[in-house]
Amino acid sequence: MKKQIIIFSLLFIVSVFPQDSNFDAAATKGIKQIYNIKFDSAAVTFRSLMADYPSHPAGRFFLAMIDWWKILLDIDNESNDDIFYQKLEDVIYQCDEILDKDPENIDALFFKGGAIGFRGRLHAYRESWIKAADDGREALPIVERASLLDPNNIDVQLGFGIYNYYADVIPNDYPMLKPLMIFFPDGDKQKGIEQLTNTALNGKYAKYEARYFLATLYYSYENNAFMSDKYIDMLRVDFPDNPTFQRWKGRVAAKMGNYATASLVFKDFLRKADENKPGYNNLNAKREGAYYIGLQFRYTNELDSANYFLEKCAEYSKILDEGKEESGFIINAYLYLGMINDAQGKREKAIEFYNKLLDMREYGRSHEMAKQYLAKPSGS
Image 1 (cartoon, rainbow, N blue to C red):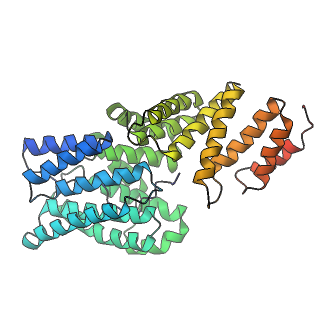
Image 2 (cartoon, rainbow, N blue to C red):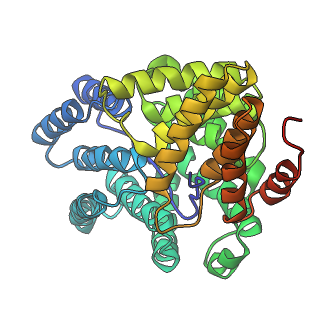
Image 3 (tube, rainbow, N blue to C red):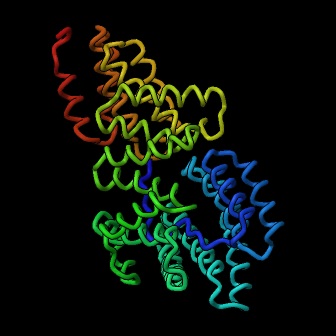
């Protein structure tokens, strides 16, 4: 799985909406529909918002966020990229028309900055670093200007929090990106976490996205699975059928060493995949689920079940890894399959798996362990 490399984006920026309870209710309803992966319903909600408030960019912006979440559900699938970019261009065009008449229109500034930020975020995912840098450089002053005009907006702190955190962390983790950072102000990791936390706890529309980012950064960069789990649980209360949040719940449990919980989470995930629930029938996610379920069965010495799920993991990996470097999933699956077959007295089958490992790239201590098990006397 790709890390959450969010370098130059000021994400999910939400402005001060019109003081209209109908607008507020519709926006809130549509946002929740996106996170609940009810994309068709969300599209109806936001198209209605556009019809009722044609001069406000919120409707177009949130329509684009539907496509953003389609991308997030299967990040390696680029089929939704073009429509997402086009919808962001529509947002930017409308905002520019507003700003031509009113250069200090807060709504237009926020949504233009947010649209450019999301465009930069996808460029970063696709490793188009120069384009991502250009978008970041363009978005930052726009949103800073909007923030000065509306300093009490808590939701905007999401964008600044993400920027402060990643501008501090990313150059150290990815030295090749350091030259691009000369275009930007220095980041401040601790300040970024504080801004994200404030939005997560006190934000109106952006609190869910802030919670999601805190969960991912605590897991991927801060090595704090317990804090990650805290924010994932908050999201799962509101959105129990969001497959992205459910996958994170499972992998965070595994990182904490709680493979029993991880297995239960992923069994439920695979059940929903079998039921064709939206977003669940994703091969990457099914591979991950099969891996952790197989691991738990191995720990409880249910070796036939462990073998079944780890074979599934390897089967999915062969499809997903085709033409690429072998994933950690297939390497670990082969190692465990070798050990399981050894434990079941199937030495020849075990040797096949160990030899396959030696033909793959080194992952962790995979070669060392394969050689160690190959050298082990039969039956020991």
